[in-house]
Length: 509
Image 1 (cartoon, rainbow, N blue to C red):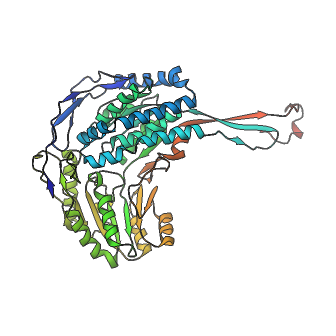
Image 2 (cartoon, rainbow, N blue to C red; image 1 turned 90 degrees about the horizontal axis):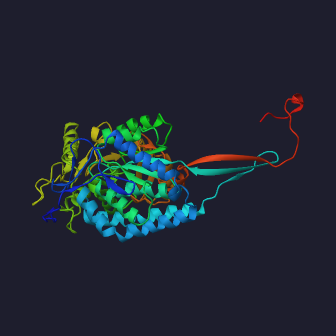
Image 3 (cartoon, rainbow, N blue to C red; image 1 turned 45 degrees about the vertical axis):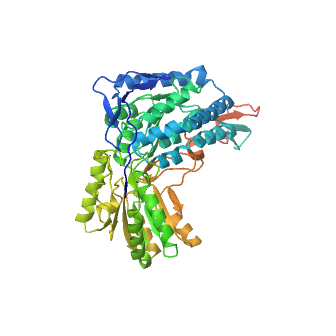
C-alpha cells in the first residue's frame, strides 16, 4: 500500500572533512553526490579524501590524545563532559532524526525511536568510567601485584549507511568515556548526521581533534584510514569482504579490532508459540529499516505443523505494510539506500525464482506517487526455501525474507547453523527449557528469545565466524579500549643474589 506525500526540497550543501573542531577542505578530485534515497535528488556533496587528508586528521587526533585538554583530563571531569554531550545530543534530537530520515530514507517514526535512545549510550559509559576499578591480584610470595589501564589511543571507525548515528554512537560513547580519540569515516551515502553530531559536540565543549571525520569512498578513504600506521584500534561495521580487507591492513600495525560484519539471522518458530505474534515479530524483524540491517530476520525456520498457517499470515501482514515518503508519519517502509541496492534485492528475487522457491509476495520495485526516482522495493517473502538456495545462504540486505519448514528441534538447529555467518539468531517458543537449549546451541553472538532487534548499551554486541570479531557495548567493549599494565612490587626485604647461591634458589621467576 503506497502513501503519496512530498517532503520539502533541500538545498545542496557542500561539506568538507571535520578536523580540529571545524569543517575543512579536502579531496583533490570531483566531489561525491549524496542523495535522498526517497527521491534520488542530490542533497549534499562531499570530498573523496586523499592520503594527505587522512594523515591530517590522524595527526590532529594524536595531538588531542597527547594534549592537556583531553589527554590530561581526569576521569571524573571526562565523565561529566560525556554526560553533557548526552544532554546536547538530546537537545538536538529533532534536527538529527529529520536529517537522518532525509539522508538514509528510514521512516521518520523509525529514526525518532532509534535516535532517542542514543544519549543513554553516552550516559552508560560515563557511569562505567566512574565505577571501574583496576585489579589487585593475589600472587605467590611477598609481592603486591596490581594493574594499571591506559587508553589505547586513536580509534579508526568506519561506519555504514543503514544506522549512521546508532552504529557510530556504539563506538563513540565508549571512545570518549575511556579517554581515547577517534577518526570516523562514515558511509559516503550517509555522512550528514555524523557531521552534524561532531558540530553539536564541539559546541558543547568537546576539545578539538578528539572526534575527527574524514569523508569519501570506502575503497579509497576507508582503506587508507584502516591501513594508516598510527591507528591503535579499528572498528568497522560492514560487509564481510570489506572486513577482511580492512582487518588485514590494520593487522599490519597490530591494531586492536572490533568488526561487525555480515549476517543471515535464523528465526526458529516452534509450534507452541502464538502464530499471530510470531508473524508480527517476523514482519518487524525482516522489514524494519527496509531490511537493511545485519541482524535482519532473513531466514524464518518454522515448525511443519504451523508452517502453512505462518506463511499465509505473513503474506497477509506483509501486504498491509504502507510504503511511502519517509517524512509521512503514516509510512511504515521507506526506500533502500541506492539504485544499486534496489537492483541487488531484485536480483535475489530472481535467484529465488531460479532456484525453485515460491514467491509469496513482493519481489518487485514499488511505485510511490511523487517519488518516481526513489529506490523503493516491495517487502518480499519467499516460501518453500531449502538450505542450498542462494536466498537461504547469502545476505540480501533489503526488505526480503525466506521461510523454510523444519521437523523437530534438531532439524531447526541444523538449518539455523547451516550458514557461514553467526551474528544473531532468534527463537520463538513458550518452552523455557527448549529456549535455553537452543540458545546455547545456535551459532550466534546475539540470541533473542521471543523478541528481535533489541540492544542495550550494557549488553555485548557482535558475532562469530564470518560475522566478525570483538564486541561493542558492555564492559567487554570498555575494557578493549585500554592497554593493561601489570605492576609487580616486592614487599619483602630479603637479600637477593642469583649468582652467589644458584643451586639453592627455589625459582627463577
